[in-house]
Length: 447
Image (cartoon, rainbow, N blue to C red; front, side, top):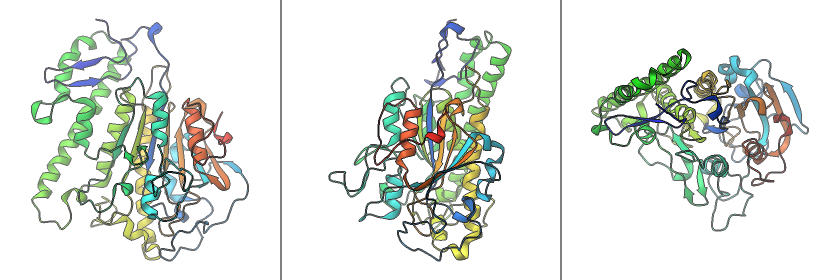
């Protein structure tokens, strides 16, 4: 039986699954270069600086909302400084075992255009960074975002040029689309994200609605038996692990849907979805993102952990005994410092979970999925309490042999965030001289 890299196993229920790389299936001569990928993991409302940034543990805690503070409350850095990542800060501790595969990048400033909401602008313009007042007919410095510019280069052969994931399960429509989306085809043209795990699962793997097919894994395994007999031992193990991950995702989705059904019968003041455990929800959406990248369904993704300034509470399991609003806590940092630090580390744990998962997935050339992915953690605010747009919290994982890793790169004050986006575009093979308000690339990241 002849099978290609993009083989889909079709079950009797009109279902299709893309397979991971299997050495036994494709002759060595047919092996193509492993694809480059890019993924962005966006955290809303900034971070508590003293927990995230090296050297700021003893700095003064800002008192409430100080407005659009454009200068860091910490020490300014007038020149470039590069040092090895040694002892990670408390918020970054979940990445301790992976510090040789990440870079902490500080000193990056983001464009701000007066006249629009701070939170909405920091989310919607995060991957755009257009120069202020240059976009015709828009109050936002919002242009075609980095993910779509890169996808123009690396997404032409994948089923989905980009995929947009969001972990905002609320349906109360509290804020506009600018608070809840970081991916845009262009000014005023939103690339809508998928928020429901089941809907994303159907988009990736199904050709029918859920009530028209039974257990997808059982259907596909029925067709897969013939192929499995042709595989070598290592590929049989890889094959089993892959379908085990798919079945685990299905099981998680079933549990979440059952929980939502039960909660919907209770008279909650807020939508039932708000009370789904955050960690389970974020990791499930993250598992779907990793599978999409692993199987070549897409090479470019964006992933929003949550929306900006949404006061509707979430259930942070293991942190608090009742649902809490991240945004409301951020405006009372002096009173909520310990709780906010817990939320920051909680978000970092979800990022670390995905970094580790990517690192364990072996590709056709022996490298890992993480080696072939630029996976960036970041936020559009440097501090959620002060609303400062400078010195943003940025971590870049992966990149393999293309990237120098294991460093803290502290850029000079005033370095545009767009310099990092230009650097990433170049690393992804996009031949452009500038991006938005960039002034150059970050040489210290490139091998």
